[in-house]
Structure formats: structure tokens, C-alpha cells
Length: 310
Image 1 (cartoon, helix red, strand yellow):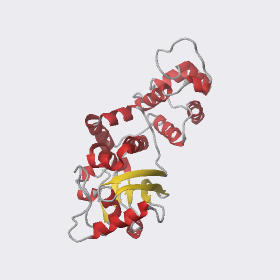
Image 2 (cartoon, one colour):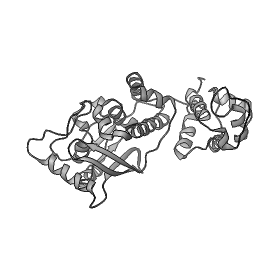
Image 3 (tube, rainbow, N blue to C red):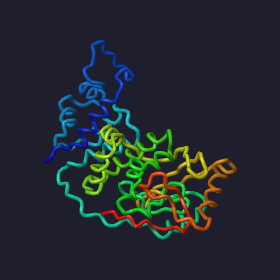
């Protein structure tokens, strides 16, 4: 059986990120490397040093649920990191078969209708490997017109890592927002370890983006929920918007993202202005991923991007 490099890399990175002093471990002797020693983590988790060492080396063993939970507790994992640990630990389990080629992801008609009904609320549906599966007109004018781009460019991580317009849009918060999307991609990679398109995307971004290489190596894992983001739009200026991420119960590989302004706020007025600007005659559509500095355009009815999953 092959080594479980995913589990090995994750345990190494998270152990190195721990602060011994915060756990009450005070050692007067200098440490050669940052973080906890293997024997310290093994003691905190209640497992033998030899067993933990074999796990961190990626040996072909399958730890029990209780061992994984003990390690997660010792490393103070949040729910997303805990879920990732369990997923990545199962990659090399006995009898594991290569996953069949995935079918095309499709957005249900009811979700299409919901997006269209949201009106001046920017919204989009994110699928596997952070592919943008569907957008409404306000998402296209606020963020980018993904469905006007080539299929391979309809991806949120690729857009935010490589498009200068995305960097300008998020301004000082770009690193925080981008690293979260990278962590979301890593979570998806753990759930679908044999996905060739994910491997191709990670390889491409690793070559083209130093921040991506750094964050990917850091093993950050994120499950996106709610947040507040400040955007700097080229047409209406600064907006403070609350984001909500809703995963569909019958399709955990699709998530609806919305951008909401507080009623009566300056950001609410800015979204109304942006909607009116986009509706003016002669606008040619939203900004296109990969076109730095491009601006949004004419508002249109909801369109599905047609992003494929294979």
C-alpha cells in the first residue's frame, strides 16, 4: 500500500503550528524546530510515540475514530480541521478503490429560480473544487462574469489568486479572503482525493502563485460560513457586505453564497446604484475573470455557467 502523504503532511504542519507554552509545556532547552515534539503530542493524545510516528510518516495503517478524535483534541482542531483529519486518514484504507469519473454538476431549476428572485442581492453557487456553477446578475456585476469566461476560468480560487481585478476588489483583506478559499479547496480535495481536475488546478496555481504555494503547504483547512467583507468596487466604491454560505442538504457539493447589505446603509444604497448602472443600455456584461481592471456591465437575467465536474 502507498504512503498516506496527505495525513503525514497535515499532521506535521499542524504539530509545527502548535505553541507548547500555550499548552503548559515549558522546556528550558532550545527547540530545533517550532511546535510540539512528537513525544509531546503523543502524550497529549494518549497514544504511543511509535504509533504516532508511524502515522506522521504516512505508514499504511488506518487509525480508529477514537485515535483521530484524540489527536484532533490534542491539536485543538476546529470542526473543519477535525473533519479534514478524518477524511484524509481514510485515503489509504484497506480495499479503497479509485473513484469513477465524476458526472457533470448541475444546478437544480429551483435554485436557478431562487438566484433570479434575489434581485439586488449578489449570489452564486459554488461547486466542486470551488468551481462557480451559477451566478445571478448582481454577482456578475459585483464580482466577475464567470459565465463569459472560458470553462477552466470559472473557478473561485483561480480567479482570486490570479486576477488582479480580484485583488483590487478585496483590497487589504485580499490575503484573508484568498487564504480562506484555498482552505476550502483543500477540504474539497480531502473529500474527493482522486479528482484529476483538482490535482491539475493545484499544480497550476502552485506554479503561478507564491501565496497559493505557501498557504497550500501550510495545510490550512476551512469550511466557509458567514463573514463580513469590505469590497472596493470600481463603480460604486467601498461596500461592507455580510456573506452567508448555505450548503444544500441533498447536495453537499453545492453551496449558495450571498452578499447582503444592512438595510438603509450606505452599502445598501451602493448596491442599488450598481444595479441601476448595470441596467443602463449599452452595458456588455459583467467583468470577466482574467481581465484585470475590467468593469461590470449590463444586467441580465440569471444564467447558468455550465461548469463541468469532469
